[in-house]
Amino acid sequence: MTTAGEIELSIADLRLVARYAALWAQTVLAIFEESRPDDDRPRAAVEAVWTFVEGAPRTNLQRSAGRDDGRRPKASGGDSARGTA
Image (cartoon, rainbow, N blue to C red):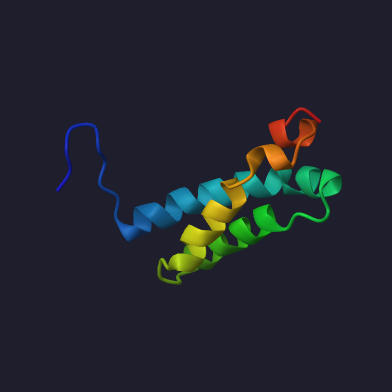
């Protein structure tokens, strides 16, 4: 059941949205990795999304990778984190 302002998505819809997000994330991943080669959180998050997009069930892998990726947004520092490299 949804409440006002909520949208209910099927698994197929979620996979489509996740695919779109993963494609765009991949376009900037190299920029981030160039400035932060030690930080593998964004790549792990994108890989977790692709795992779901390719048909795997939603699991803690996607949830934890997403949380890990966003846990320390200021830790990366620099312009690449803001997309202004």
